[in-house]
Length: 276
Length: 311
Image (cartoon, rainbow over all chains, first blue to last red; front, side, top):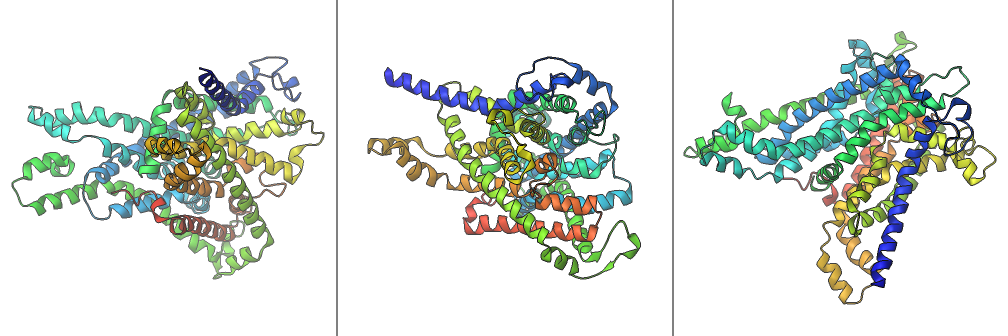
């Protein structure tokens, strides 16, 4: 009985440490976003005066709302393309026998390990020549490409686990091939595809290197790039509150996805990385 | 077309009576169609710029003087490799990579053990531990930068510092490494957790019966069995840390002696618009990353290469 109590105490302590370490920096940026401009620099962790005016500020200026629109649009399109292309490749890798399978996985690994900054120069140069600089496709193309390796790894790990015999069994039981596919295979494959979609969306949503190098105006600038170049009221005042408010807004959707789909993301990332 | 899009089980049912090689050939044709888009996209978007970077790195190519472009052989590489700033930046990058990945490994292992063994609130712990992973990298860097800065932050006050920690090299390194560790430890822990799950409980129990202490069980059973997962986790995290850019850009764009190779690459390309020199830096960075990957895979064990086990 006593030993059990001790164990509970030990685990509780570990959990408290993890909570503090994970949450303090997040709470800090939330609190900073709720401080009035006059108290933003007082260095206290918890605001002395609370306000929502920073949120009003950022939503009343085009720079943030445009960036938010770009982030959502570019993120969703890149993710959709990457998942569709990767699904077909992953299906072949998981189920079919063909020469060159190892080579494809090796190419994907090479792309995954590639230092993205090394591509920025040539892409910057090329995009300016063919008119893709500072446009949506100019970001969608690199995002989709760099999302492909992880998508292929995660999806083929999921597809390998699907009991494909069920499809044939359904056909033996009188289902048409299309019914068998739609009623048996689609529901089995959906969790893997949803997981991949979330992981890839987070990667695109997070990107900074391409966003800051391949865009220059609100036409295609995403939120991370916009935050890093937020203009102050004057050149010498840093808009702490506005930066913090924008940071909170851009964090909320990803945080919700991570917390809601926590179990799936964990299994997806580990399956992709370890089973490879 | 229908043979191309049909799932092979159907193709199999139809062709079962035909010669086996027909089926194999149809399967190969289908596979080629299915993987073609992914392969074409990956090669087109990475191979072309790589070749372009190599070509540019052999030229004098400066966007400020577009008419002075000409082939100059390896002299850009000579420039970069004899410049003290390159070696300083390599040093900065190695320092940040080694220290931050080491700390991430120790903390990540502790976190993975807690997530694996905790006897209650397991879902809650895993959710909370993932929070830093879900934070946008730029936001994490902003949050820590604002927390450390003397003008706005709570950390200098908490530590009772009189000066600005971000005004000198040591303080800036501490702040940058703390940021990197906070942001990336959850991912390290996830990769290690997958390895922990593969260690059979019976072995642990048997060792316990034989009187092994918890530490002995950890070092003699858990760690050796986790070796492949540990190597994958260290490889992924090392390559990622070596490319460090976001955090440094947000903190001070490489001031205070924290310029990393990626930061130098960005500055040469997009601030100074020197495509020739910048591309030489790109190619050298790429070679360094490839070298790290090669060392991990060949020296520490080929089994660690993700993808090589895949069939």
